[in-house]
Length: 338
Image (cartoon, rainbow, N blue to C red; front, side):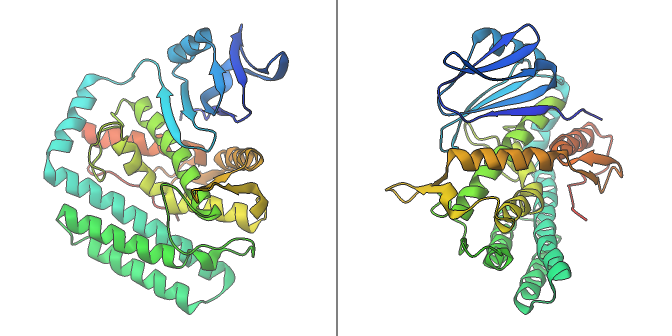
């Protein structure tokens, strides 16, 4: 199994990263902020005004360490990745899959089905741990109905409609899972998020999408050719496909935990004149510390039946997808939380 390497999240402005021997040094002006063994780092994520020296970029390219750039508010800008691994035969197989509508709808149904099942699990878990709730049970039943109908769909547009219906049902009850009076949620708002919960969801989705992108590149798949998400210039469609399996079970539960444990408060967010809400620098640091700890937690992978760290789930699913496309698996087993 692949070893889970560390991710360096650089949020302090006017920071400079460079390499000295086998160590990555982080500085601000003449002040050294930290240093890390280069061999333990798998990703570097930079927010705002962060500079990376060309030698360190070259080293990261050789070692397959991805460098991602975001605005200070968390909007993804660019990504630098070194040599592409895998072989052209796997990518050509992926492109042929993407041109076969039967295979596209088959894979897209599995992805949507896993997303709905994992969304329903969030509510079933809430009912199990906190007692019966007629409203949450109703949402669970609606999601179960969507899941049942998903198996019968053989049309792409119908599948998108069903996914939208399930998402509407899922988010309609999310506010009931929030046990912190400082926060509330009414509906999903993106581009830009206009409340703290939506800001957190968008931020965490963006981070996990980059983890999925790295995992797909790592097994040799093209992250820009998807099945549920259609191709669009610059959009990592397959990484977004993979994200769907992790939205409710990983991202949403992580956000709810941060809020319900009061690790973040309403003071950790700022609202611009446009109405857009962003995390403060302190909130991002708190979130990343909790996120790194969450990635280290182990679970039993439902298909592999092995103990894996949560941070390796994108790699496991990318590996299973590659095996399916190579013909080693009869079908692709999406991640289903249990």
